[in-house]
Length: 60
Image (cartoon, rainbow, N blue to C red):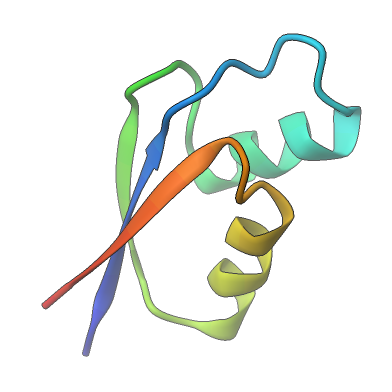
């Protein structure tokens, strides 16, 4: 099954509370934090919400 490598590239300072909560739910706390999640619609939706704060790569 494919996975998503999610990297936080921008700060959460000044962002909406919803975006902060979404990043915390993904397991990201600081700039350059990286998490690997399985490719599921739930994670895709969360990434879509904070797409301006993260970069995403597909890994196998």
